[in-house]
Length: 464
Image 1 (spheres, helix red, strand yellow):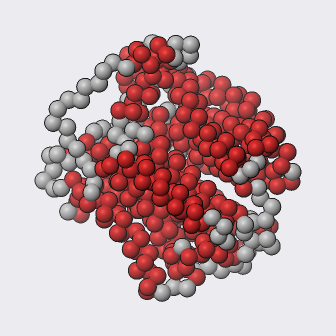
Image 2: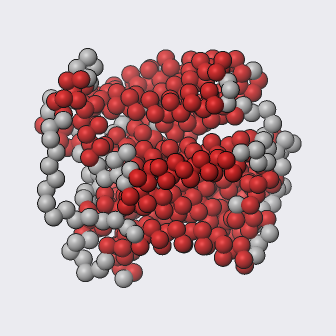
Image 3: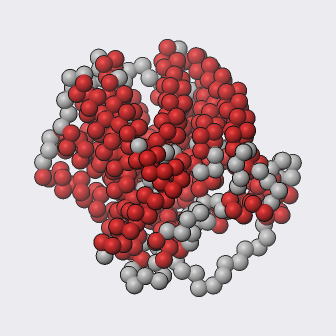
């Protein structure tokens, strides 16, 4: 059965390389190497306030968060196995005609994705970081660090995979369970010191390698994943689904809004697609909850940083992922029959994105009130709005309507990092000097509007 896995690996390569060539896709890991090398070289500046133990802590939790952001496979099961996936029809879509089980096919799909993440992200990130550290005479064990970072990534992925599978089987009832679990975790971590974070098994294994810790790490990855695959939910509809016409009603209620018909379509697409609101929960809310859970302890290791400022910046960055949802599963070929241009579609997506931003905005407001900093709410909200607008403007300018695919192009991703990194770090640095300097983030709003204007000109030359 290795033939299926091999074919899926080739399919993934061809799907990406067809957009920007073999070289553009192959050079993507090189960009990751360069970024992580610069990160480790920055230790020449920050090494006096951050210990090597703290650096290892940050690396492992960074990979844990990355894994959690891509672990919603439980919701993708029916999307991948039972229908066209975006503009492409993957091998997994042939599950009804292949003489093998859906679980076996989807297991191959997941393993294929994990391997690609390993070679595209984890391996080059580790290699670049270790190489940069070696230049400044800091030595890490490359193979052990590679293994523990990969285990950390897979731990976050497998746990969210399990949660998303529970949601796929129980539906909205699972949201209550996840909410209860979140409250319990917040209570357990309330008041704990940063030393508790070092019990993360992959990190503990790097510090003190042992067979017992390796077994625990593998168990955290394999057990949730196996349970998720066993309870994988793949429905093959035996009848057509019928929905009453809600489009006219929704569009009418939004009649005051210039893009009411587009927004109504986006809402119906999201609510009727597999997972529905689960996409928001597992692609955004769960990672945000994890960040809020661990961020206070992580920032105790870096004195002077304002936790609320960092949280607002991170949530603003993550909010831009909602633009990806709006363009990833839309069939743009259907727009070709309408008197629309690419800028028209981009504006419609941006309007829907603005409405979806009510969710992270509410999180920012609740968090500000919860931390007892109501007097700082104007600064924090302004910072979030500015970062979110700037992030999505850069995303639109660089990727247009093909966000998920285009960012795997080495040049595009390098431009994305160079446009985002200095701005984000600059906002955090200004707040460290003086909290009221955060108000300078207002500059990002006209910059974002200018970038969007240039985006419409750039993508106006393309056809849907």
